[in-house]
Length: 339
Ligand code: ATP
Ligand code: MG
Ligand code: FE
Image (tube, rainbow, N blue to C red; front, side):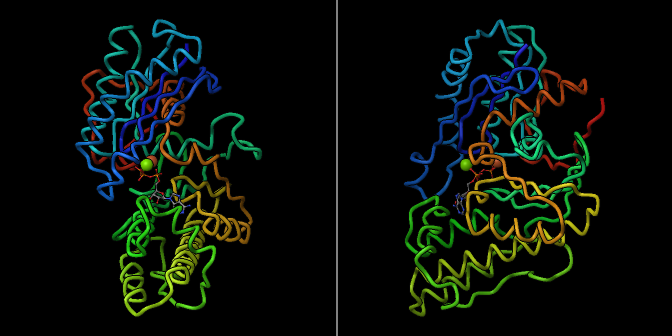
């Protein structure tokens, strides 16, 4: 039967129903952006309460849209980490409740695995689903990693950020420019009317071995440039150019670490950035592999990817016990793809 997916690890409450073959029957995402914007960032306690208030109704909504009831489901998959513990408890407990009430298998989905497997959703990408192994570049507000996706449950983290995640860097730089939170899209718009060459900024770790990231020095340089009176739009353009160049360079290094990689898949909210996409596509093309980006609504946090990861796990015979506890920290490397 169809699989209900639930996502509540950060500031999006999401539910989706997928047919066993991966066809999307219904999906919905409620962003809590407005609740958190006044605080300039995600407030965990507010997030947990908002998930609790919204999730049951959202699950009903997607079932209705799909023309189904709980009794028609074949399984429930809920994000169970990594993320903010309050939201994880809400989603995982609700998911387990549904599973117990209707005698269904439960899959505790790792949020990072869900991002990693999205590109395999049947019919999603024109180029077709990438074959293993492929490189995942996860660039969001909370994550910044290069991952070799070698199979279901088989992930090798090649590099990560030494300080801020790249989306976080966008948000902090935007804040310094007086832009509202989350600042990424605002900064991109401002950068569009600026001159990247007017204010040279550092490109942290560019050209260094490996594929780790670092953005705190860049943020400091942005603060200094602004304090010295540089035009906001020029700083924005230069910041964005620096990030795009660094991400492309890191992706190149990561590709060299996975010579068999069939594609570079990008995920996370920063994948919305035009300059980042262009730069990454060029880097991938230079090494002879395509850059694949799921549609933006599936790059950011959503429940379609959670249901799909659940389906992949169910197909491999992997389910989780009802006493599975959500994990705020849950590195990809700790997963396995075999029962
Ligand atoms: P998680 O990290 O847990 O997946 P998140 O909510 O932090 O969740 P996303 O929702 O995937 O991450 O992405 C949000 C981030 O993406 C924010 O930091 C936002 O500023 C950034 N972002 C969104 N659009 C753009 C853009 N056009 N340019 C740059 N950054 C962007
Ligand atoms: Mg988000
Ligand atoms: Fe995410």
